Length: 424
Ligand SMILES: Nc1ncnc2c1ncn2[C@@H]1O[C@H](COP(=O)(O)OP(=O)(O)O)[C@@H](O)[C@H]1O
Ligand SMILES: [Mg+2]
Image (cartoon, rainbow, N blue to C red; front, side, top):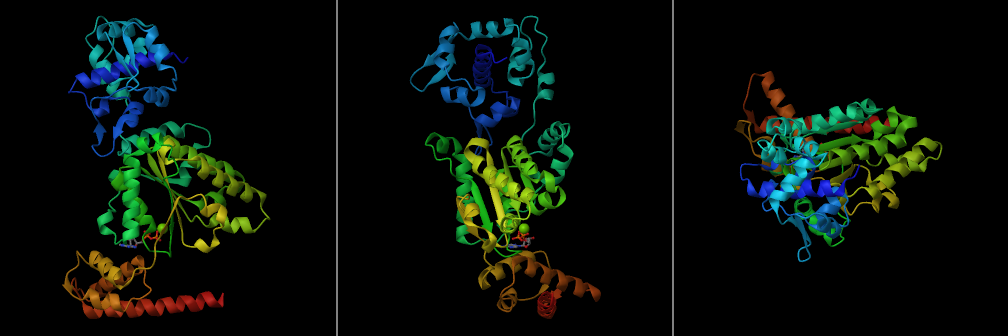
């Protein structure tokens, strides 16, 4: 049952105890409070932690703070600042301890358990409460605990096969290892700020942020950038290939899409990365398959409904074939970020990053000049070939000829590939 007085008292006392007790860390707060009050920049919950009317609404779905405060002798509602706070702390403490469900709240909340551990004859332990509390979002532990919970549910096995989940601590792709143009850098920074100032955006009603579409040829850094953002923003990374969802479970496709978005909301805060976003365009143009059409509509609807500000989910779509997307899809993203093939200067910077650990005498300037049209991942392949070729003669150091030869081989291979494709 929704006991508003009890929930409000537990929350207000938790904040008060947290403020008073410097020994307590943000991790001691129940995860829903930690999430709600989390300060991204400082990576903690800052003191003082206040309980405002808005907090009550968002955390507990309680809309009448004034009535509640006036019905509790130890609580006061402060119009200025719309805060609810304890007037006589000790009476509040006693009230909670004596409430018939009070102990349950205390046992599941390390902050309260810490305070009540030696209180009267209550049977609570801080250690036990900590064990119950969920760990932080950045850790594998946090994600695993959610997965364990979810995997006991119906159809969970299929769902978890569709979504590849990585946590920030597992991602070694960093933004400084990616060569990005100014637009791309600005967009990343914009998202960092949007997440940092999420509550402000919500307050002013600006909720149309946090849906990005990455557009560009294969190998230009779309996936890498999304992953690096996950590491930078300290958000778990949920990756979905749209083709997988349709191919494998045709009849279930529409439902799968809803499940994926639900999963993202439950994993939040997180990044939901949807790769091969153009898959839906292909299905739209062929009306033969009603199940696929339903899936497309589910997807569009799910995108409409999900929000960074409301659900703590940053949505990133990626496509190599933007020309296949129709306006219904475009319209749903509030920022389109272009990933062009790198120009000469960017190619040199990418090469410099790739070869940074490789020994030898070579000039990346010259290589960048003869690799027009190469993507970042093409350049990576060229260097890999050079290294492997050099190893054929037991050399660990590269010279310029190795690189130039690898470029030549790469060009030969791509033209063969084009011929093969034309003959199809
Ligand atoms: N702009 C870039 N700067 C540095 N490395 C890049 C860049 N673009 C691509 N790469 C490298 O190429 C590889 C493939 O990139 P990826 O992000 O998978 O491309 P996409 O998702 O656009 O197909 C990655 O390992 C990445 O390191
Ligand atoms: Mg990719």
